[in-house]
Image 1 (cartoon, rainbow, N blue to C red):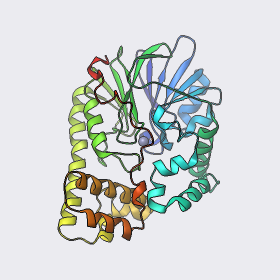
Image 2 (image 1 turned 90 degrees about the vertical axis):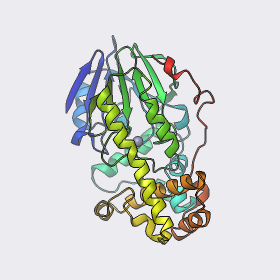
Image 3 (image 1 turned 180 degrees about the horizontal axis):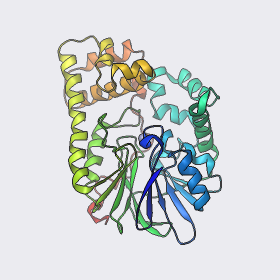
Amino acid sequence: MSHLQIGPIEIFIGEKQSRTPYSTSLLIKGKEEDALIDCGAGRPVFDHLKKEHRIRDIYLTHYHLDHIWGLYLFPEARAWINGCDVRKFSDLDEIARANGYYAIFGEQKAKQMIREERQPRSGEEAVREKIAWSSILGVQKSVYPYDRPFELAGVKAVMLHAPGHCEGFCCPYFPEHGVLHVGDFDLTSFGPWYNNADSDVDDMIESAKRTLLVDADTYVTSHQKGVVGRADYKRMLETYMAIVDRREEKVRKAVRSGLPPEDLIFQEVFYLHKNVRETPRLLTFEKMGVAKHLRRLLKHGEPIHDYYQSFLSVHGMHGEYVDYFWQQPPSDHKNDTREGVK
Ligand SMILES: [Zn+2]
């Protein structure tokens, strides 16, 4: 466990350098009680926080397990979630639909799978997963606002809505301390992750730009890269987001060359063969990611309608569930006064 402090904000890097399923947390020290942002750092951090702090509020940037699984260890704290995630935090089927299970497996099997995931299997990860899903359903939750300042443990904060990674994703910003928690804009060599049904490639690109519109000089990532200054963030973000174009070019070339749609998920667009061999369920996210790129190519005028339909068909996918958005971002989101968020 290592941590860094900027004013009242302490940054706790999680286990294994915050590699998934761990993630970095921010602790905001208030006068009497403290708040936590995200809750997946791992036992050493949780033990420390429980011993040294009184955590009253836990703010979750989005519903992904690696950011929420420790919630059950803080039963006395209030959980704060964003408006887009409300239904997911109260209904397992919404999670199954949002994360792409409906698209990959069909409604019936997806409903069954998401429930089976609540059953204990073996090892800490299964226990964690079980606890995480059930805990988010049972916990009392409040909704934090997007894009307007509010007091978070007595510190001015703005939750910048930054959809793309998933629809509700946001970046907590502390204007008085120049800190932006960019979370899953994690700058890793893997590149941006937008492989859920509620992910969107174009939104992710727009949101990446948005992280540079605020007056921050400390950027905190959720995984591996840790904390970087503004100049480094800008440079690394460019490299990171360029991976989107490389993936899309790979998909476009493969389609144009006549590659059979059944082979398109084995081109390492996202995951390397060796990683899929070790963790076969990654193929689920490979399918979703490739489907997202095919849809984006279609949207941009590429005449691949039949190819896309064949892709869905050969992989047994359900096209009506590839995109999930139950709630559009607030209507003022696209043209809000984001420069004014200082
Ligand atoms: Zn995530």
